[in-house]
Length: 443
Image (cartoon, rainbow, N blue to C red; front, top):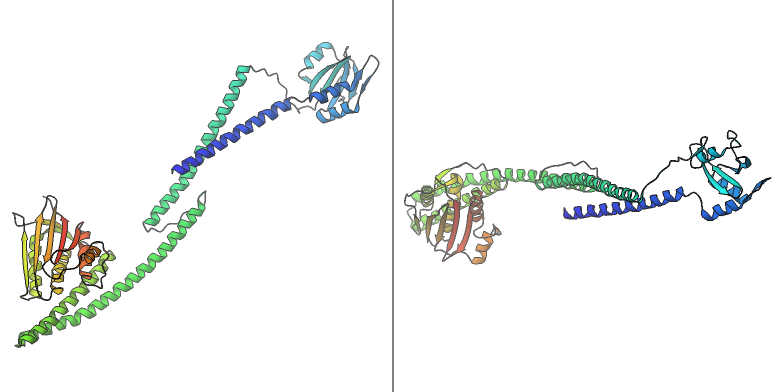
């Protein structure tokens, strides 16, 4: 914006300078045109006229001078009688009285503008065609002339500034249209700017970019629709046989008496649950990415929700090698947050199951909720294998590879917490540790 203003200030200065130069040239030419007599040629002209009592002669150079600057000429004797004429109009008199000559000396003879020159022995009258020259008696004082010159410069500058300001307004209007178009494009809105004016090339480029972005948007939308359709079909095809596998595994487990075989059936069941959770996470991530998930927000007692999640996971993974510990610092026994209960349960389930599936030898899983003034901090930790700090940093920075350990589960947890204006931090602290901060429901 500053560069544009500087540019127009420079343009204004240039315009003012040009106007001053033009005015100076104009005044010079105008004043020079008023001085119709070239001093040297005028002397030659007068010297070429010879008059005495009997005759009057005019040289060729003097006639040429008349042809160059005037329409006609006459030479009068001192008594006012005509001594010589050259191209003299017929309607003009040939003899004049002294009073008439005094009246005509600065003005007109009949309708003919004239100039008069005194020469030895008589008077030369130089004339032009009617309506060819306007003559007026103009007298201007020195102070007045200076004031006129100052006013002339002032109004030239004023007009130039007004003109430059008007041009700036036009340009700014064009620029605002371009800026508005760029903002609309940044919001992925389809636009079609009118390609005219000072910035028509930029407008054309913006229209081209907008068209290309919208074409890409349609392609992405079509691709996402195909992906969603494929995921829905695959999820359905996977969940149906998994449900059968889990059901039959549980039936076989109830019938089987051999401990080793019961453990093998338990492993099959747990892995089936793991696949089910992965498929559900995949669907949820797809919905969150495409903003298809409708957040059903309500007030939730996070302590109650935590107990329910622990109970659900313990029912699914009924293994003795996992110990669950839950505690909080609320004196009321209840801590409230605002959010979608289904999504919160999914996030908690993912963290608990994450500790189980990556610590098959067993571990102690602890959950502690600390209540602050306007937020709560939930700490999930286990004393299992954990992860190295480099991997934890990649997860915190959103750079984790979903194909490696702690993949889909961590992605889902981070997305859900961010959706509720919270933060998630993964750490390696004698095992896996996750710190979640959420806004607290006040009142």
